[in-house]
Length: 442
Image 1: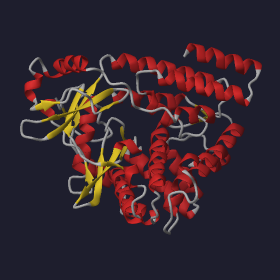
Image 2 (image 1 turned 180 degrees about the vertical axis):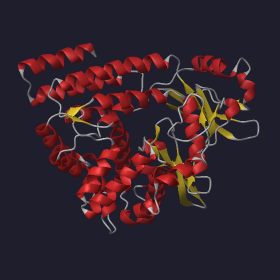
Image 3 (image 1 turned 135 degrees about the vertical axis):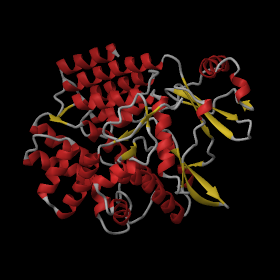
Image 4 (image 1 turned 30 degrees about the horizontal axis):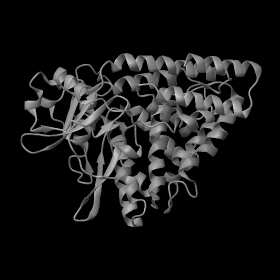
């Protein structure tokens, strides 16, 4: 990483052509691709926020995969012994030696409970806290290089948000809580399946849960429009309902975190995976998201400005509001359009949002460094990711009707009341803005 920074700084000093920028971007992707921590998810997050990184950097980083070489059986045995004790194998009827999946933080093994239940055991690699801290230091270097290129965005708050979210990926106690929260939210929704956690077979570095069978969403790209629309409706509900009613969002909505399940030969719903990247927002922020929607729909300047303030923006000049509106109208566009349509008419997944991001970049550049609130990073990344999934499915729906059903009768008081019905937070999580009690899972 130090070599990359030195090369980038030198090319900046002596002038750079397009080929130099492309080469730097490829170098950066190679460096980050060798890191052990979860920077692939960071790269995906960065790629959705206009001008956080040069577009050439973002394009290269977006191609990084979250797959990683699995650790061997000797490693797995040592890790399982450290989490469940020397007799850990007696706790399972069977436990597969080869992992079914491996990623940047850990790997998943299939097992069977003594009662016959099929299980997924998500086992964290050792020493991941130090690996993540090392990765975050590398990320600070990337931001430093970009600041030297006269960035239009002050990345300080973005860096804080990313660091906090990445560290939370290591916190399996928090992830267990998120899983309990989502199971509570969707307990009466048969179209959305959330794994059940086995607390007695889990620890702060091991999560044992139901194994949910399903097919990749891309397997349905050639299915009927009815099937693809159905899956999109369910995914829309699975993402927007928790946010509009509880202020909770699943912040990693990419294709790998969903599978579709079938009943009687027909697609019946989705399995929702990976609860390490979940964020709980204040009711005021949720109000800002709803107010911005209504403000854009009515072209009410005062309501729009108030909404941005709820999001955390400050020093809002008229020019800055106009620039933010370019991006907001792109994000909210399908939700404001009362007709059946695709999520982005005539736009490919590869080009989704690029035109609007370029416009915002140009305005931010002219206005000077703009401080982006931390909440914007997570919300924006999640919304773009969700839209990308809908593009892949080729859904044709009335997103206006679907969204208005979600925010009907919304109020901050309703969000607070709904939160009181959710499972309580673990003892190491500050629930001051959530109004939840403290418990300990493990």
